[in-house]
Image 1 (cartoon, helix red, strand yellow):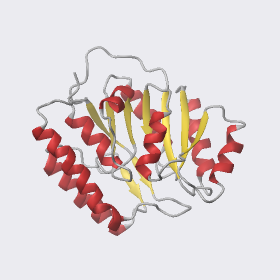
Image 2 (cartoon, helix red, strand yellow; image 1 turned 180 degrees about the vertical axis):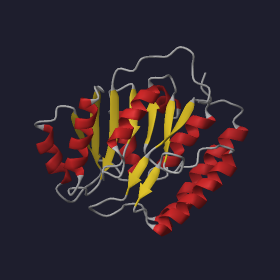
Image 3 (cartoon, helix red, strand yellow; image 1 turned 90 degrees about the vertical axis):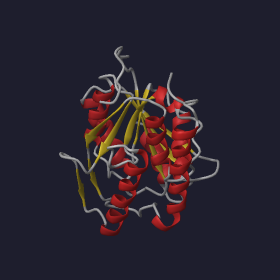
Image 4 (cartoon, one colour; image 1 turned 90 degrees about the horizontal axis):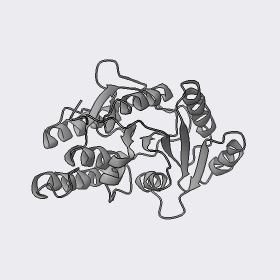
Length: 254
């Protein structure tokens, strides 16, 4: 654990933010499985699904699902679309004092959400999952994406001098104080997945890493396009690197 506070604040409500775009094939099962696991484990929660401009039945299915799942809070992102913008929209509408950002395609394990909650309640500010440490794993990870993933994460380890080896994975957990302490969030696309954890680290929030599992989506089409994201990731990384070394600690946690 990296600098966890001595006085532990008991958390009251977990918000789970899921950005969704054209996920009619899996959104119902994702939400239902997540709600069932959290209910069985006694985790107080709300599930915020942000429809980011879907052209299929995603929004219609969410409306139907809300009729028997009061913990579900569907929201439409009516502004500019983008993975990062959808997450920010969800963060702006959360009521919890902790949040997990999760994919809508069932690639993330809902049992790991419970483990995130338990870890946050031990007093750490952030919990970062890693698929590439002992106990973690991946199922059916595309080879090309795996190669780019490992190169990108090694680059971030060297650039920021951190041991975290899965920074680019979106599936992470934060106390609400971290979210507020990392604002303004400026990444509109998948580069938000590195903006949030890197800002949290650079700004002095405590964090821990735990193993998680991931499996490739079984329906729908992956939204991440590697060619389009390279320069956007690099921009965000250099932006936070400049903050780390040249901001004189102006944005650090106090």
